[in-house]
Length: 85
Image (tube, rainbow, N blue to C red; front, side, top):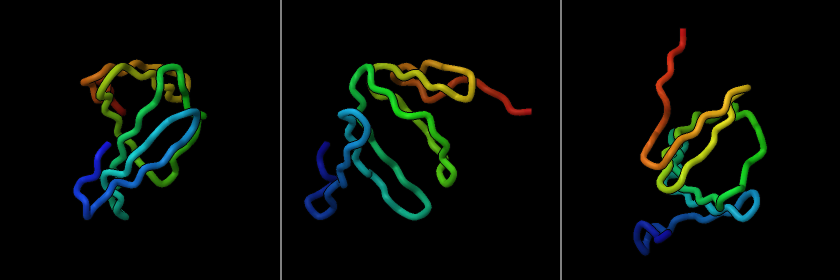
């Protein structure tokens, strides 16, 4: 991942088992990250109390466990049809 410019380098971080991340936008009201997860890696089930997350899969696919359901998102997809009543 390259810097936006030589004056605005991206902050790189690592997490979990061999995962990489880059902060594309890091502001109080908005944070945008790009993360790279090797196949077979998973994160610990957790709650985000201060953040809302949106995932867009660039390459490969990902399984998301939400409460007791699991959904698969493939590259080019941003979510699945849903409704709240």
